[in-house]
Length: 354
Length: 118
Image (spheres, rainbow over the protein chains, first blue to last red):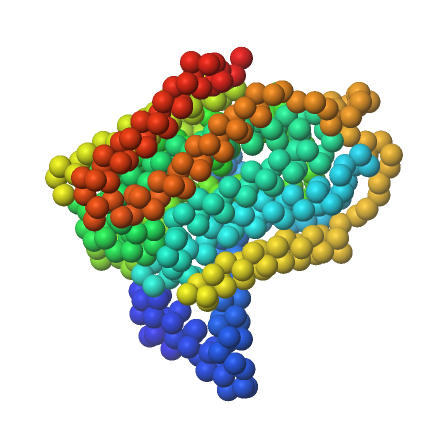
């Protein structure tokens, strides 16, 4: 058994396949139909992905605090665990036992469902993210289009939170986030379309398979598309320099002003899930996903994605926040034309050279 | 094929279930001692003035409207992008005409000042 472990870490997809088959065998043994077996397998896969995502978020929150601290010449959390590595767990436990204050004036059902919708929209993206060779919950044939559409639900959650709180800061934050997210949605979709023109498929696994080696990465064919995607994606997940929805210095905490305890924690979790998923999508589309030499595929995926996350954090703690008019003007008057130009250039290049 | 999208349904249900489970867990642990002051709307420590459910700026509406137009165009462009390489020159000309109309619309909105926030 001990000899098996290193091998199974190297070939995680085989391990997963073995476990899935074992579960299926057990379930069929007690006489369940194939539909039930699939359903239970999917449920287990889903719980594993949620658990994995939760661990990643715990790590990313700690990382963000350490990176921000070191960029600002501070130490950051140092007390709980090695260099504060367990700080996030302590914070999560703290949030769990915090009183949940629901103000009397809120629109209760909407106030209650807003964090749920935001979290579900953030976690549903992980259905079709290829974590490694064969490590994907479901390879949807509309993969990237599905991701684009499901992430848009986040904006409904934020708007629900902002509106139902009956708080002026929350309302402004909600409106700003709605305006911002929908404005940056269009250039993001157009930037992804540039890649789709090369791949001729929307399936995430197929897109990774086409980027066999370093030279086949789509970033070399889509440099403008990549820049537009990264800017738009940063805005999509409301991070500095586009963090106007929760601009602390003017809007207190934006749409989460009235939220406390576990409801606040869910918004926070969703935000970091989005951070990880935009980096994972960038890895899949532009950097060859899990393809790479020597190391196992899932390790390559994590390395590339975490480098992407690091760059996003670096940007966040380096640049100041934009003004609202600059933000909207940038989306519609610069990013959208740039995405159109990229699309036309890509079309011409394919027509001439391929 | 069906089980592909069953995964999506499972994620939606279990994702919501995860959040509800956390809410329940927190409910069992956390204290609950509400007071009228604690439950009032936060407004920098002052008593809140009026409701927040008021009329809002029409510019939000304009941006939403422009977004709807462009997002529908994006959905139309996706099938074209997938089959582009197999269609050849015909698709290129067609796309250029389509994009020209789109960009003309953007230019119109720009000149009309719809893209200005202030």
